[in-house]
Length: 247
Length: 248
Ligand SMILES: Nc1ncnc2c1ncn2[C@@H]1O[C@H](COP(=O)(O)OP(=O)(O)OP(=O)(O)O)[C@@H](O)[C@H]1O
Ligand SMILES: [Mg+2]
Image 1 (cartoon, rainbow over the protein chains, first blue to last red):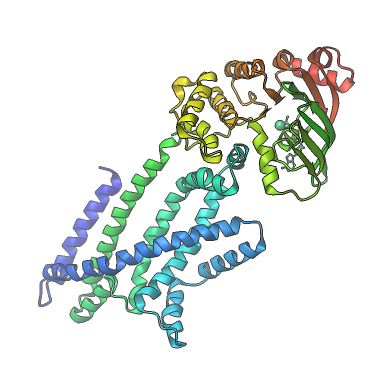
Image 2: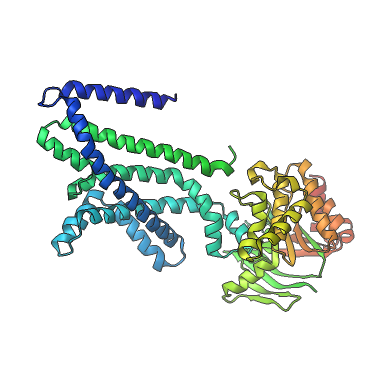
């Protein structure tokens, strides 16, 4: 077993035992509360956290690619809007963006439901951060690759699609995975605009039972599990994409 | 006359890299360009392939295709120019995410939209010709430098260009790998390809060239058959350069 696997395992066991010990004081034993709240939280996860993450990431990547290509273009009509967008998103807190889209727009008559509001905010966020990653990875591909593509007659878009992006993808997978994992965790902010996702469920139950420690740690464990599974998938994708690279 | 280069000039900012270059290349001729580092050899070669856009000058091909630099040119015209010549790079520039075979098929298959079986047959025969029949399914990082460069040559040949350009094709190679690559180029010479080769391999240049161009500081100092330029150079600068290459 690798070191981190071992420490993860022992960490999980410890946390679990602690929960049982400190929560036995309520009407329910801590263990029962843990079990009983697991289902609603997982439901919140499956109904909202995971769809929110997947949909926002998918839309965000498309925005990111378009923004990256705009920034690499040679005319200001394309580069300037892309730069302003990236700068605005990166320069303001995600929570504030979320509030502007939900409460702000709502207050001026443009009401958007919580879930789509969250999708918009998170997509724009992934779009901005992702575009920087994609732009940097395209820029990291040697100029000779563009030139070789040109000398066999490829157009700009053919070179990009067939030669540059496949290589840039390999470079951008690790940083994009970080963005993805951050997104999983950031979706908990959607609880503040009333999306009943995983963390909102934890808050609701905690408000009734006052078992803040147990429920929030339980929520943390669930996020951890999701991110852990994702990082395994990431490793597999990286291994696949690395098959043509000398090691 | 296969290609005439008239009054070609190129500068990078303040630096005049090519100063009114004139060359005539006959069909099936092999021209090698020699000269000190920074003299503009690579730039000249790249101008023949639209990798670099000259500031001035005219390229006129045997089939009537003519391109005059100086004014803004249509992209289509530049692409037509780059399709006329196959380019072999000093650092190979193979596509690392594609196998040797895929590197070669990419041009005819994707750009020229040719029939898949026909392209496979062509690519296999080209890889066979460069001595890599048994390496077709390997990725570039699994090949030696010399093998990679030979894939590079096959890739350039696959688009069936009219002219082949080589920029120091062996200078990134270990000495023992140089021979295989030079042999492939000699084979192409026998097949009658028109080629322009930048090289420091004077012995090779002597064997294959119809004409050798000595360049210095963006100008052609001397041009003639190998027997003249290499053995009895007319210019002081040429003989100094040859001395330096022979006895470094
Ligand atoms: N893209 C560029 N931008 C600015 N200067 C350039 C550029 N490309 C080449 N140069 C300059 O132009 C001059 C000629 O370069 P070039 O590469 O054509 O020389 P070369 O004869 O091929 O040299 P070498 O034998 O070292 O390959 C050099 O001074 C070089 O620094
Ligand atoms: Mg050079």
